Each structure stands twice: as structure tokens, then as C-alpha cells.
Image (tube, rainbow, N blue to C red; front, side, top):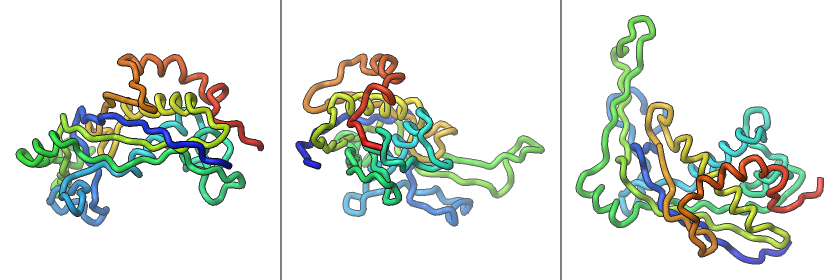
Length: 233
């Protein structure tokens, strides 16, 4: 298999609500101190790990198209999702991962604002189902990167011989749309992690402003028609 080129997808990832991607473990919950967000060791600034973005996008695509295995990620090595994200060592069909998700750093402007205002603390409580009131001693506040912050988002895409670059673009449109409709990071069902993508470019070409409308036209065709590559079973 021959690697022909790399294609870059870049965008601005904006927060429409506070974001929490934490560095704490379960043993830290319930001590009263806010659960910290993940920060760069060198810059001491929060960032979004590429692994979080890759894992959430893959998960959303798999549940949208029914490609999970026993409740976990698909590892068939044959479907288009495995071609994009990797199939795992247990697969009998080994195809190299196409998508390389970079860690997302704050834009210069957002880093400057955050340096002045700091992170926000969002209180959290556990509700007693009998009384409908907060259960005593069950506080679990957490740090959040505030609404309005913006990150530089990048995916480097490996294009191998026989790969269909345009169809990879279509899969990414659906993946990004699903991420916008869902949530990133912790406490997504309680308001955190609402994101949006802007200023998107794919292979140096700008996405149209109405790219979300394209999602409606291509969502149903992906599994059958928008093949990245035909894989022999």
C-alpha cells in the first residue's frame, strides 16, 4: 500500500457552553474541590486532547450507522469507519488509520482572555430522589473552560492509493455535524461541551457557509455509496 499524500482539515472549534475535559480520577470526586481540567504542562493552559475528539467522533459515527461490537468500538477492519479511525490489533484486516487528530490549543486571543478571567467553576450536586433536594455532602464542582473560548482544530489525513479523498471529506462532514449536535467532554447531558466548527478548510479549500445543509444530503449515502476504499472481505 502506497501513501500518496497528506491532506489537512483545519477549523476553529468554538465553545457554545463551558467545556470540561478533566485530569482527575474517580477517587477525587466528592472532596469539595473543583475537578481540574486538563492543562498543558509547559504553557499551563487548558487544551483539548486529540484522543477525546477522535474517540467521540468515532463513537457517534458508529452508533449512527450501527457499527458497534458488543457495545464497544467496531474492529471489523472492513467498514469505512475502521478505515478512517483504525481497526485495532484484533482485526483480521489490517488497514492503516487515515485520520490523525491533533491536540487543540487555545487561539492566541482566547488564551489572552483566559489569562485575565481564568477558568469558571460550575457547581454540581447529587439529588436525593425521595426529597428532590440536594443530597448532603454530595457536591462535585468542576472547572470549565468558559463559553466563547476558541481552539485551533486540525486533522491530518493520510491518503493512500485507491483512497477517495472526496468521500473522506463527506465522512468528516457527518462526523463534525454529529459532534455539534452532541457534546464533548464531561457532563455533556448537563449542559457542558456544546461546540461548533467555523472557518473550515479541507485540502486548502474553504467549506461553504451552509456546510451543515450538505450533511442532510449525504448522511444516508455514506455506508453504501461514499466509500473511502473498497476492502476485500
